[in-house]
Length: 189
Image 1 (cartoon, one colour):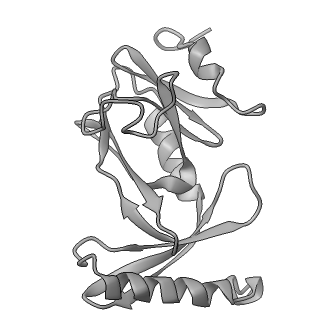
Image 2 (tube, rainbow, N blue to C red):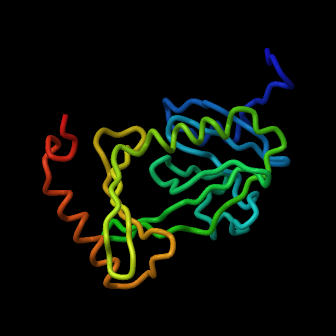
Image 3 (cartoon, rainbow, N blue to C red):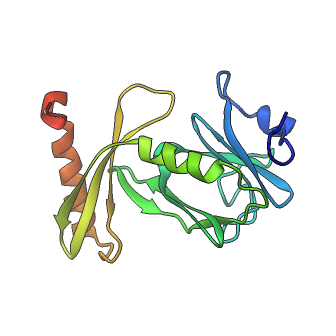
């Protein structure tokens, strides 16, 4: 029973894509489609977000019409008048993140989805550090990958820092250095 408004049901087609122990934490509507947050990530309708690629193949989607972005892959998520804005990052072989174009979801009924997204993205960040690179700064980030133990170390250039080979090489060097540190060195008590 819903206290406020009508109760949203997870579409069966979306639920069929879930991992065995995956459960919905929050759900909202993006026009005719559903957007769901689970403990593993954010399920988005393929092609339903403005600024997103229109086809399942172009946007990394599934044939069923949804794709999941793991919480550790969400670079930034904000809620505003335009809706929920999500920036997804993709890793190169050196662990450097490149931002994909922002997706804006104009949610008809946002419910608690924006706050769950904010909480999950923030909780995925175990540690971050700003570092100097040629032409500006970058960030080295330890992220928790949902459903796994341990951390994934990534790096990304800060906004305004030119994307260059020297800057990416510096970030890759920082990542190599972090990989050599012990947990006690990384997280002193």
